[in-house]
Image (cartoon, rainbow, N blue to C red; front, side, top):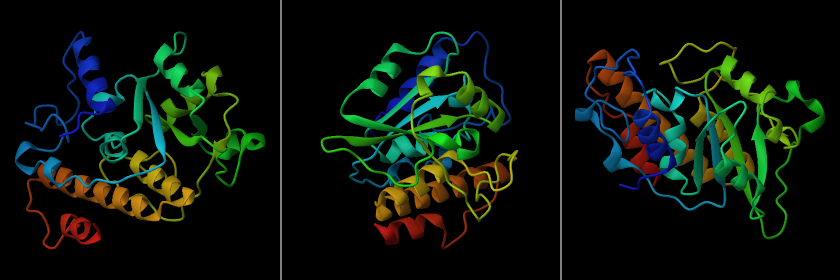
Length: 235
């Protein structure tokens, strides 16, 4: 089991909590890493991949505590993943250092309608750099707040997606039509970057998580064949 940035952030956020996080399903006995019901743990099935892409997730305060968060699925597969809690007035110094690190070429993933002058349609990475895809992880209302109140993001080029299909994620109610889960968005960005197999693996890993999470929530049996079989056949 590789301990990644979101595992560490989750542990740190729990350590500073002043009261228990009692979201829906908070009493379920979950695997501390994949956050699925322990008897349905998916950790041993996690695929491995090699990628030039890196991700930086800026997470609204309680988002990292939610077992339904899909940002952790990105960090599961992409070794160069960073995660920080958003602070409006005191942004994390380590996060700012990552954004300024010359090895990365950051792109902010956000709808272009909010800053059309910053939109880029293609990912052109300068020689010697690697793309760093920045995701604002939270509810739509929270993501907009982070976008508008984070001056250190104001100069980053925007990559925007316009999904035609509805999200496969039924664990949360979307506030916008065709709003996708964080991992679904990341998969589309990776595909645009040209790593189509990695995008497929992330999509399939998302389906495995979704299927196991929903099965535990509804106390049903896993479908056979299901998402896990599709993942295995793609590796």
